[in-house]
Length: 470
Image 1: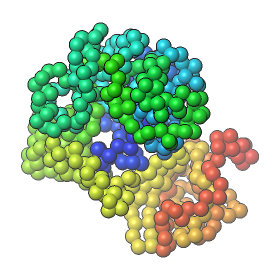
Image 2 (image 1 turned 180 degrees about the vertical axis):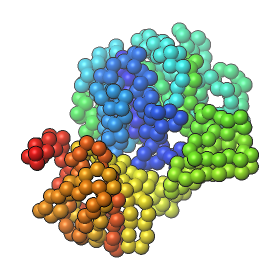
Image 3 (image 1 turned 45 degrees about the vertical axis):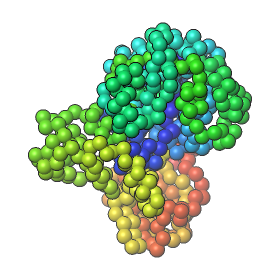
């Protein structure tokens, strides 16, 4: 069985923590592991790392690699979507990869899962995965349904019909309902939340695509290289619309394990531990006479007095305050920010790169101050700027600085000045992280004033360079 993990979504419903540059699958929520790492490790009882395929995009490649390394699953496969598409093209691309590159046969099952859900009671989950594999081998499309315990309007629903094996035949899929409709679904007892997970054989997914989405099938049935090359012309459509809602072979297995897609701050409140007053508190927060309130702080003290049924989420550049039950509207806030051209809609003040990270500490007319962290053995590209100079102050580690034709070492409490229009490169030759404070000065300080003269060094180039220096 191949495990297909979809990790390319940009996610806005958990703004301001989740943003386009750092979506929720890489966040750590009430756990030491990110949601992606938790998803990967969930399947260890039934799959080797080499049977795991993660579908993401180029912007998130270094995040995915870091998470796989952190959980010892470096041998998992990574597929990079050339452009953002919905789940049907992503799954078709994954099937093509498994068949063409991994030698998967028509009878082998692919189990597809999002990368950003919380699932507990993993023994029950693995039991359901085994049931899904067996049902899929009978040429069913097997979905996992979650028995609703409230009239949730943020999920799609599955209407279950007659018993079919260890599950139920699916009568219909329902869009996210309004509250009155959700109440009816809850009362009927035959509706389940659609978890977004399903199992199907390689042969069956291709047959379903050929029947219901011939445009996708023609591209996916080619070699993986050809499928990848034509990926951007595939329809931007979900697997539910493309296949599941049209097929008569769909069954749903009720998932008995705890499941939460944490698609809103209300859902985050539900999964976090509460104090005696029902408050979920993370970070440097003081709730005085508060009840049933989420307070999540990251960079400063958050004090609440007399709050009730509120959601308060803080980052170093944004504070969001909402009533409980209203957090589905956060995506409307993000759209408003985008309409206003606000960078907060997409970016944190801290941006993670393959070599490390940068954090904006302060800015004003003619200056910007950043903290730059470079991982051991990593470096930035050789570059120059036409409109700004830079001062670098080393606060931790040792920097190897290329400045024009000169290469010099800069140690803690030392600094170097980078004039305008001078080629320069920052590298960390040491064994501990390099941290510098960078002060930019000039009339134009945007990132598009970076002229890249050479890319960062590869691992092999680094080893050769260190050998020569020695």
